[in-house]
Image 1: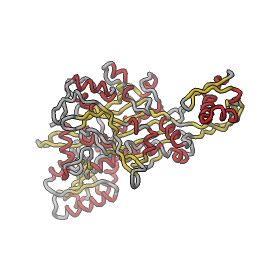
Image 2: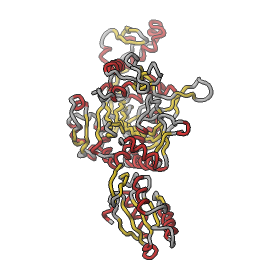
Image 3: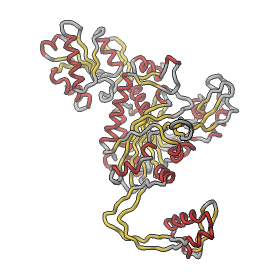
Length: 578
């Protein structure tokens, strides 16, 4: 049984996740988290908030999942948020063309998404790839762009189109002026959000790995380009980097410190390097196996339209490398676009320590000349003259100035532009922040934590399946069992379970079957500790605490139990300390 099949069977049987609406035949790309999965999801999200919001001092928001069409026109999603589609002429099924190429047994292409559509079509023909559903050859079918956004209407009728957000980020960007005000216009500051996103995937697959509705945890960190991150916090952290040069030379992953990665130019952005550094420990914290983990740099052909640099945190799952997180340098793209489309100010005023006097080129065009001379183009010419004065004052040295405006080229006498260089005293400047974005796929983190923690071993001659999940993220912290449900043991165990819940611990109570079988049930869902109430409990007020991975047991006073279990869960002590 493959890793994926084994995990899917466990996930359904033990209540981690299952396909939605199974009674109706299921809905491709939609999954429901069961009791164990929902608890695991909540714990991973809580760990994410702790690391990327609380510890970094950022703010968190919760924006709507539906936004009007102009937002996505400005962001570029309407035009560019596409995947490669090839449709079978015989059965009508649609497929991700790049995935068909990557999955073909003869293919040596690891990242077909970075290739042009035409080249992917040629590879489909070269490998004689057939439709996976009906076996019809796809060689003659065109590879086309398919927009992944779900379209909807806001209100009655179709006059106000909108989209389900394909990422949580735009809900942060569109209200940036508000967040800047909350941050008192002091850079850097970060805005985080955990929420649902939607992508109408052509070929959902690998259970919760590629779905049409999923949870994202995103941080948009707004920084002055002159700001430097606290790199000293992580400069000695070793990170596994699979750079563009290593990919192109068929090399392997290179281990280097964060400082070496920056100094050697492997990671261009120091801010990006900072987040790669702090994230490595966080992945370990939630159960990602570092022997099955890497940071892979995007090739130029796969960079998003907004990114100048991007690294993916990837985990190995069933022989494939799967993206967990995208770390992107978005520059000023998003804020510039929303400022352009709305006419609003998406900058931050940075006050100087002391006022400074500077020379500032200005223009004051004579509209009495420009209006009659250039007609309707005069307004655009003025805008271009102002922009030209700011970026290239030397252009006004001649007798005339040439500008491109309103689709044409216009020559304006310099004396009519009112060009001058003035001394002005300024208290500060408007800065459009650069954006550093770590974007996490929560479902993929869940799947990876389960896959990387899956173990099979033998205890007392009996085969055992267990999930070696870190106690912090395990769905249940402790299972409470009576040795048997008689002589007051069951009643005492139920009282103890209630007390532990009141202390803030996730507890399950089980009195069904042999004690060994109850242990196995908890091992299989990753419960790190089990407490057994026996006759000594009634006499001495102590219980047996069992640790999942080693199966070791110790006696702990009932009075100390809540604090002891909380300390074990939070990593303040280890089981060996007991």
